[in-house]
Amino acid sequence: MQLSPMRKPFISRMRMPGDKSITHRAILFSTLMRGTSEIQGWLRAGDTEASLRVAQAFGTKVREKSGDRLILEGAGGIMAWTEPRQPIDCGNSGTTTRLATGLATGRRGYLTVLYGDESLSQRPMARVTGPLADLGASVWTRQGGLAPIAIKGGGVSGGTVHLKVASAQVKSSLLLAGLLGGGSLTVGEPIATRDHTERMLTAMGAKMVTQPEVAGFRITVDPHPEAFPAVDVKVPGDPSSGAFWATLAALLPGSRLVLESVSLNPGRLGFYRLLQAMGAAIEFQERGRDPEPWGDILIAHGALRAVDVVRQQVPAMIDELPLVALLASQAKGVTTVTGAEELRVKESDRIKTTMEGLVRMGSQIEELPDGLRVHGPTSLRGTVVNAHRDHRIAMMLTIASAVAEGSTELEGGEAVAISYPAFFETYGTIAK
Image (cartoon, rainbow, N blue to C red; front, side):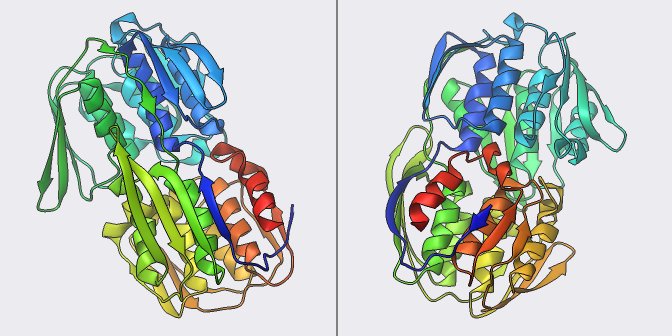
């Protein structure tokens, strides 16, 4: 795919596709409901279609699937679930796989098998299956704690689990197992992670309590084996998708951008607050809460300066860290990112693939065991770069090409269909 640089300021108002994290949960949690629910503004992409396959396998029925409107008839709760007739394809979606693993512990005696593509099959699942097994679940993986995962429902007891790695996906999987298990379950996390699961389950009627601790947070959920009444969900725009355009606005002099009606969940704004600290002008305008806060984000170009990103900041910007490296390459000074070893087990080793792509374009970057050190500013030049089948790397390199000298040849750009199918169409419109 041939990409040309942009030679003009980026001035726009944009609406992002539906938030991926919220869409996943709205679909998967339909298995716990009775009645019909409408998911407005859902993200229709490869990852969320995987969650829909899981929900349908458990008995959720699709009543309407048109544009950004998805109407589901809930499976009726765990006692009404159907047992999956065959292994369920989770595609490339780690969120689907990990949350579905927790869900599948709920129906005693039912066997669920989850598998995915080559990339998913190399990502760590023991961080979910290990704690579940400690709680009494019957779970099996391939050697090394890798997918496919087989789960025989039932057996999960209450107790306390302390997570060593901060992960919203792992936390959510355990909370779902506790919700469908035999006693109150407490999950402790070392650093607060995004709380979409807690917000949505509480809105459905689940009993959950979150308490801060000296080091992190603890969330307790009470069992609720009965079906929840169906609830409608309005999905705001995805701030992680908006981060690519925010980066473009921050890099191009004279640019001004408004991202309309996006999620303003505090756990999703770490990147924007960092962008503000780097020198871009950022303003948040909250417009509502139902139950997620949502509103507009205003971004304007500014002279960028280096910052340090430490472990406590990583969970709130884990998906955007490749963009931080790009911004740092154009900022004055040396930016260091540490505590981000989680990037090595994403769709690609994002520490390596971020560094590889940007270095090929002229950046000065040092690889660290848990992050990167970026020297700036440097001039980027167009060349041949590879996204390594990673959607976020593909989109980051596209934005890099917009501020580079000369054209860029991007390989592996088709991966964007996983999370943002219209990305290149949108970019083509902006770049004209």
